[in-house]
Image (cartoon, rainbow, N blue to C red):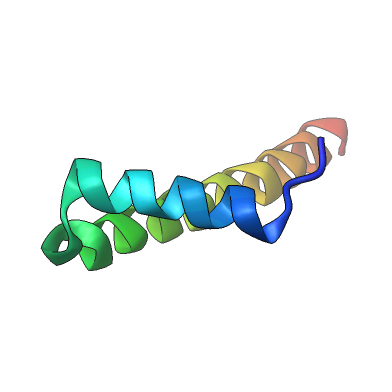
Length: 54
C-alpha cells in the first residue's frame, strides 16, 4: 500500500474538514502520546518477561 503525495494531501484535507484547523494540534498531541505509550508498553512487556525468566 503505497501512498503518494496526492493521497496524503487528500487525507489531510479530510482531517482538517472533519476536526477543524483549531483542533489539529490537540489531535496531533493525543496521537503522539498514544504512540509513546504504546512503545513504552512494548518495551515494558519485554522487561517483565525477562524478570519472569530469571
